[in-house]
Length: 113
Length: 119
Image 1 (cartoon, rainbow over the protein chains, first blue to last red):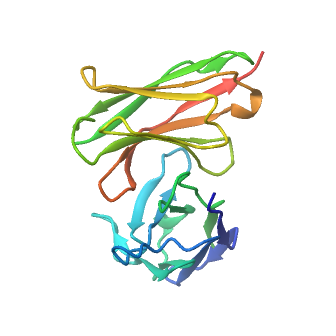
Image 2: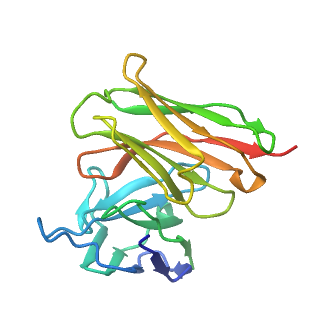
C-alpha cells in the first residue's frame, strides 16, 4: 500500500493569511504515461462528507474558490490557501489514486488563530 | 444532478453481517468510465478507502478487508450494495458511498450513514 503522510496534524492561521498543508507519499504517484500525479485533496467540515477540492495534484474542481491551489510532483505535494477565510475551517485530506487501495492521509485540522 | 444516498442499519451486533445500500441518482453505473466507491470514517478519525466497483463490474477491494467485503451493483435499480461480514466494534464508523469519476476521483459523496457495532 502507498502510505500518505500529512504535515502538520493541525494548523492555526490568522484570517487573510496563507495556509500550507503538506502531503508525502511513500512512493511516486506520477504516471509516466500522461505525466500526471494521481493526487487529490478533500475538505471536510464537521458533520459533512468530504468535498473534492483538487485533483491531478493541481486541477481545481469546478466551483472551488481560486484561493485554493495544489502543487507538487512525484512524492511531495502541497495544498495552499492563499488568504484564509472563516469558512475554510475544516480537516483537509490528501488521497492517492495511483494504485489501489486508494489511501488517504491522516488529515490536517485547520483552525483560525 | 448526481446524488448518492446510503441506507442500512444503525446498529449491528458483533459477528453479524452488515449490508449497506447506496442509491444512485443522476447517473448510471452502466456508463463507461464511472464507478462507485465506499469509504468509512471512525468517529474522530481519518478516512479509510474500502472498495470501488466500476461500470464494467470490475471490483477493487482494500487488501486488509477483502476477505470480509462484497460489493455488487444493480443497474436496473440504480444501486450498489456493500456487505461486510463478521462485524467488530472497531468497524464502528460513518460509511460513505461516492461517485468515482473518469478522473479517478470521488467527486460526489453521499451524506454517510453511521453504523455502530455493539452487543
